[in-house]
Length: 211
Image (cartoon, rainbow, N blue to C red):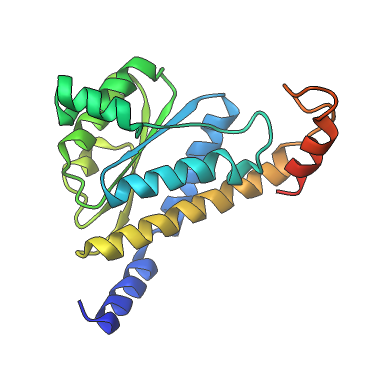
């Protein structure tokens, strides 16, 4: 794609993005945080990188690294992924660990441009069977995942790069929305910091407030 056309497609996709849908997803994550649920994230290829980035942002940046923050588990560990792929099937690499770890009321976020990856579809089906809430960041027409997810944020473009760029932007929007919640709802870390020796607590608490 010509760079001018790429920029045009990217701008159009962002302009057509449902900001209300992003806010609704942030509300769902905030509710999960409030009830102490775990958020799982999954994706393939470039979307795996976005999912990993999201796990970092939601667990650290969104809550400024404070104790009692949102608990996020990326289903992307190379040992687990390759074990499930080798011993069962690649379609099971996310559903297998999710079935073992998730509890009703937890949340699964999947990131997929096509929405048709078998392991993403299997993970969404597993989540539904286990009463795990699902949020899907999708592209193109949403694929098979669109009908399986509880909440969909669609980057309505037909170019993988554009879709992946928009998904990363959505991650940052969700992070900012949750960060705003943290500013309002979560008190500053008090010394001594939870779980740290008293000698190191003041410095740790200070560094957390400055994140």
